[in-house]
Length: 245
Image 1 (spheres, rainbow, N blue to C red):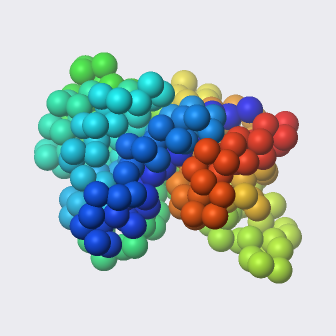
Image 2: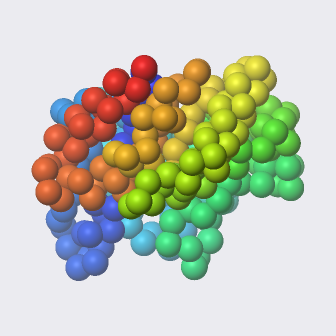
Image 3: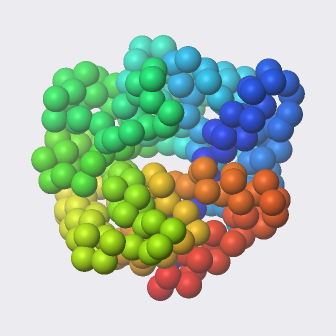
């Protein structure tokens, strides 16, 4: 069964709507841990639209499970990561106008820039990953710049699920593509993670893929938590992943 890292960005989204002190991402992280989360993920964006610098510092000091820090490959964020020393860093593309991350990082085009960032983080003892589309050329480029982990973008697969069900052969083909790229990632000596758009309806197929080490899931869990609480929402997701095998 893959590990589950819970992204709590959107707890902070609700808080920032009023620039208030609640709901607390730190409390959400503790509740997620009690619900069975294996890790916590946060994305500190350039525009600070949800998670804030103090959130990252407090989480690093307080939680007992691994902290995964999502960030763009900018000097500001690299310096932040080197100060905070999260357990892992995932480098993602970032656009001001996007609501959430819309696609994988183009490691092929950005190899020189990313290699420098990866070297600095790796030399500091921080496991580094890249968020990529399910493309072999991106896996090869990731291996060349020395990352330890590739997270495969599962958005297209997740979006193929509609209220009426899946799109059949198209959904199966997208899942097979993730599986194929996951196998290539492992063949290149890197860890295979997956995430984006996964929810309570579609997670089991991805969780059942051979060799997937960790799933990163946020919006679906936070949305469910509004009605049942964070502990229960995380526990339900963990149970689905457990039954996938």
